[in-house]
Length: 379
Image 1 (cartoon, rainbow, N blue to C red):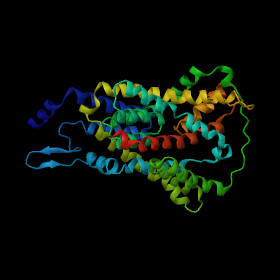
Image 2: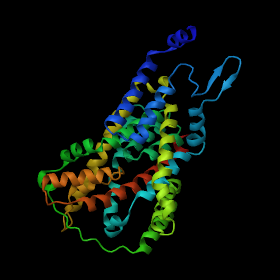
Image 3: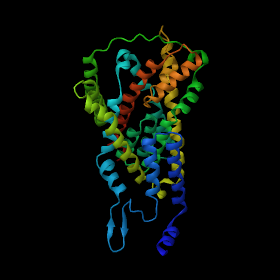
């Protein structure tokens, strides 16, 4: 029994708190359906890495020396060494996305840019709150509403807050149906939310669908070279979808491949959730800043639509601008539900989907722009 008593005696109150956080994440995944494919592994992993002398992490064992733990090894190989897992996940995401609604109404791509304002506003705010610039940029990217991008940027910038940033990014993505309606109502009137937008899609040729991911990658390569790894993997996945000759690979990328990577990514990220690094005031500040980033993004998209309405004859429903964040397709669904609630005849789904896929592009480009500044940030 002495080994059991030794283990209990070695348990700190911070580890107990992490057990509770892990249990909460598991509960949210199972009971509330909060990004279960990633949140459940993260929750279980948070418990694994915080057990005293856990064999899941690197440790020194008397008589054996340094022993590698599976989760720390996965983190080193799959994330730290080359950011492989977050980047590979973009192949699956790209294969899931249909850019047709955006190609039929290209002007909506501007909402994908406008709704990234929250990233840069949050970076400024985090800096004012005392975070150094690499950590502030890593926190700001939570506003991209794109978990893999948040993981990639925070890891490349060597932020010591990868765990809290990941938890915040994925938690708030799942809470989009709660966060966005609140933010939208802060900056729009009922009359604005009832604006109708007729949907008359232009035909999109197969050639256009095939050329789009190639052209996007080339443009990103010249505008923000550091974004090529993100944009390239996203667009490669989309090319698998649209080429028409690799349907089985496209299906694999959308389902089996992305599920496996998500599963491994979730439990691997847990290695950065060790109690001594996670339980601190900065974690609470990151959670608060992440929430603000989502609110700022949503409001920026709405306000940009209102600005355009000053100069256009055919008015844009400001709620469509809010869909310019990267939380695809949750944000588009939220806008559709809000539109119908305001007016049962007001169907905004296809416009919102176009802005939403534009947000997916905008988020990875924003991440690439921040990565392009990495050498200066890390000096």
